[in-house]
Amino acid sequence: MPNNKNIPFKKNIWRTDIPSEKWEDISKDSIDFIYSQSELLLKETLDTAKGIGLKADRIITILSPLTAALVIYILNNICHINEFLPLTALFSTIVLIVSIAFCYRNFQKYEIRVPGEYPKKLLLVENLIKIADEKKQYLNLVINECENFQDRIEQNDIDNAIRQKRNTVALKVLLFGLIPCPAVGYLLSQAFL
Image (cartoon, rainbow, N blue to C red):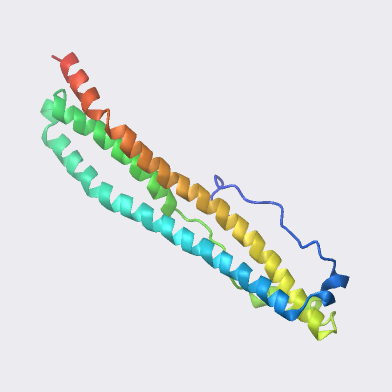
């Protein structure tokens, strides 16, 4: 379960509608195909998560030095803070900091679900000993893992959508927040005259 209480967690775990007494009707090739497709999709959600993290990293990498430069400019011109350029720099810095904050949240601890399973969850009596038939053992393990894949995929999709939205908000704040900064700076500088 995710550590961040602000991230929704999918509570309903999907289970196949194929009853266990019909599992022997499933061919090994079919179940192997389903397993490989499930694993492939889960790996795709991991690649998406990496891409989202890289985008956030790029945004922060670009905005951090810009923010630092503006802060230095503001501090050097603190005596003239009521003038057009320092006011514009001040409002631009606020917009940049808000944008950085949204991207930074993507670096906070988040839980990504990966392929594979711990042996302690697979090597169980109910998976192996209670099922004497070799094919049923195999099908039981693969079907259970496919159900786990589905759950992980859905939760990764939820987490990735939230993280992607943060990047989008950061860019929108940046694009639409910087545009009015010179106008607000100019109007306030005129008001201080």
